[in-house]
Length: 252
Ligand code: HPA
Image 1 (cartoon, rainbow, N blue to C red):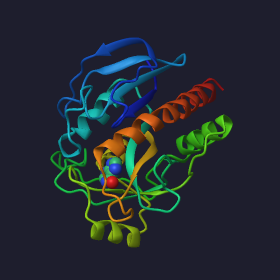
Image 2: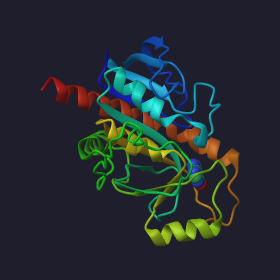
Image 3: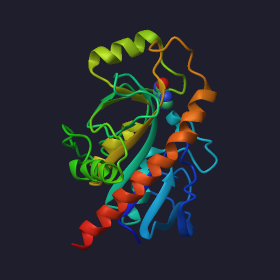
Image 4: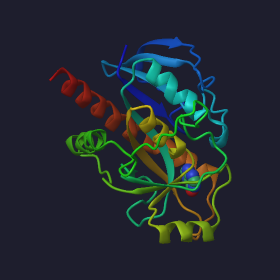
C-alpha cells in the first residue's frame, strides 16, 4: 500500500512507467471513481495511480466524479496527491511547453458536486483553503525539477473553468484581470475535495496552448496533442523524482 497518489490528466491516462501494477476496482460512499486504482511502483517507489478522465479518456471534466476519486484514494491509504494537469497559458511565463506548479486557484466551475460537506448529515463545515496547494508537495516538485535541471515555473494562479468547450477571448481577458496565469478544467473541485478529505495536494501543470485570444493562431487539438506528447516525458521525470523525494522524507 502506498501513501502517495498520482492523479493523471490529459496525456497521462496511462502511466507506462508504472511497474508491478495491480488494478483494484473500488467503490466509495460517493459512487464510482474514474476507474480502478492502479497500485504499482514508479521508479521503485510505491504509488497509486488514477487517471481522472478514465483509462480510455472517456470522462469530460464536468462528468468526473471528483468526490469518488478523492474518497477512493483516501480509503486506499493515500495521504499525498500529486495531480497532473494539461492547461492553457495566460501569463507571459506560461508559454506552451512550460511546467508550472501553481500556488493559487480561482474557481469558475458550476454545477459540479464540489464538497463532502453537503450538510445532509446536519453538520455545517467550512474547511480552510487560503493556501489551496500543499507547500511541502509544491516544494518537492520544485526541488525535483531543480535537481534535474528542468525549467519549471514555481508559481501560478490556476483558473478552473467548466468546459468542455474552450474559453472565449473575453473570458480569458477577464481571468487575466483576475490574476489567473493558467486555465484548466479539472483543478476544481479536485483540490478542495482533497483538502476536505485531509489529503495534501499539489499540481504539476503542463502548458499545452496559449489560452484563447492570446495567440494569432486558433487553438487546435493537433497542437495540444503535440505539446502533450512533447511535454509529458518531462512531467514524468519531475514526478518520479518528486515521489522519490517524498519517500526519502517519509523514511527520515
Ligand atoms: N482552457 C481550458 N483548459 C485547457 C486549456 C485551455 O485553453 N488547454 C488545456 N486545458
